[in-house]
Length: 368
Image 1 (cartoon, rainbow, N blue to C red):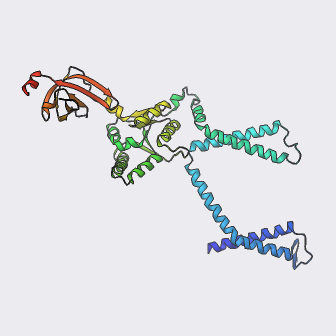
Image 2 (image 1 turned 180 degrees about the vertical axis):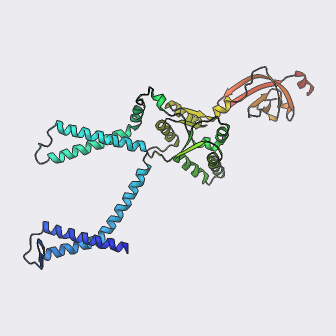
C-alpha cells in the first residue's frame, strides 16, 4: 500500500515536470482544451503530462530505490572511516576553500567574459578537493603537530601529551595466553585496546578448516572473554580500521601512532618494525626472560636429567620456568636427580640456556 502511495506521488510529480518542460520547449498551441488563469491545456501539454506521469510511475521508483541503496552504502562507508581522517578532511576542506577565495580575490577571474562565474566555481571546487586530499594524506603529521601544542596554562612537550597507558594487543599475544596471567598479577596498568581488525583475524583463525589453527583461534577468543569478565582490567574495543592497508602489523603500527599507545606482542618481526617507526613495544618474551631467576657460573643446583643432548654424552634438564640446562657427561644420569655446577650461560633470542657439569667427578667415575 505504501509503495503505491509513493508511486502515485511520483506520477503526480512527473506529470507536473512534464507540463513545465513542454511549456518551456514547445511553442504555445492554438488549440486549447481547458484554460484557467495562466494554466492552459492543449495537445502538447497533455502529452507532456502523460509522459511525465508515466516516467514518474515507472522510472522514478527504481531511481529512488537505487539512490537509497547508494546512500545507505555511502553511510556505511562513512561509519568505517576513522575519526582522524574525518577531522583531517574537514580541516583540509575549509583550508582549501579559504585558499580558493583568496585566489579569486587576488586575480580578476569574474572579469573573464562569459566564463568568469564558471571558472570561479571550478577554482573553489579544485582548491577544496586538493585541500581535503592533502590533509587526509598528511593526517598523522597534522595530528602530531597539534599534540606538540601544550594546553593553556600547562607546560609540556609531545611526550606529556601522549597517553602511554593504552596497550594495543596483537593476535600472537592474545593466542599465547600469558597476557591473562600478567593482567591478573597486577603488573600491567592502563587500558587494553583490542582493534576490530584483530578480532576479525581471530574469527578467521577460529573458523579455519585446519584443526591446529582453529584451536589457536578459539583459545584466543577464550582468553579475551576471560580478561573481560574475570579480570579487573579495562578493555576497550576500537572499531577503527585502515582500508588502505592490508597488513595487520602495519595497521597496528599506525593505530599506535594515532592514539599514542604501546603494542603488546611476542612477534619478533612486529617488534622490529614498530621500533624502526618509533612505536614503543612491550614484548612478552622479553618480560619472561627478564623475570627468570639469575644464575651465575659457579653456582650449584639439583636438576633432573630427562633426555639425551645433541652432543655425545650430554644430558638435558629443565628448570621450573622452562630454562634448558645442558649437562656435560649427563647422559649417564637420565632419569636421575643430580647436583650440577654451572659453567656458563648463553643468552639467545629464544631464551636463556645454561651449561653445567656434574659437581663431583666421582659421580661420573662411579657410573662407568
